[in-house]
Image 1 (cartoon, rainbow, N blue to C red):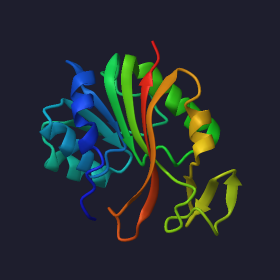
Image 2: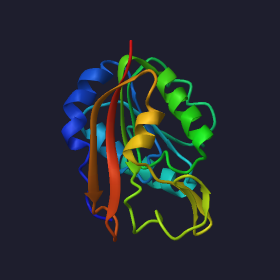
Image 3: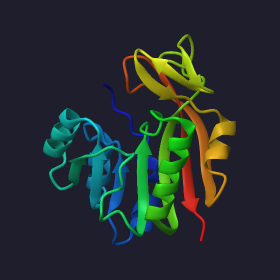
Image 4: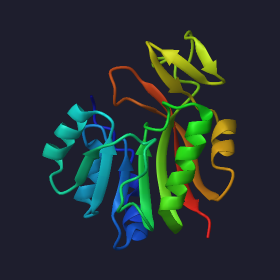
Amino acid sequence: MLKDPWLDRWLPLAVERAQDRPVLEIGCGQGDDTATLARAGLNVIAFDLSRAAVAVARVRVPSAAIECRDIREPLPAQAQDLGVVVASLSLHYFAWKETVAIVQRVRHALRPGGLLLCRLISTEDRNFGAQGHPEIEQNFFLVDGEPKRFFDEESIALLFAEGWRRLSLEHFVTRKYVKSKAVWEVVLEKDA
């Protein structure tokens, strides 16, 4: 994997909004973004479904509280009244109803004015399954045996229609992986 500094430009805002509260990272993987957040002086609580990834992330970022957890389960106990939640490429494994429920739980964990910094796989992503796979529901496919959701601007607007104020929505191609990946970068603020 290559360096993917997507979070760097949002760090000043994340530091400002976090205040004295931890930052919650959903789907931390091996800790790339966890390390970025910790280097900025933020207290990070993070989780991922993969035990192997969590083990690597714990070694890379010993200052962070990292655990193995499924996002469909309740959030960690300390994930309350947060100023910042980060979810990079971790909200795309679920049916629409589950995705909406996850986003509502995240919103509930944020204080008014809290930020959600997230990246979502684009429907324009051709290298990682946005075409040529059995469709489960609209923009949700069975890719090599795994469910994977892809987002367009309309579905993002629908997902974050209630209780959010959009600060930024941009389409990018990341070169973090061997093949390029098309993603939406979305920054939202919880309404008061």
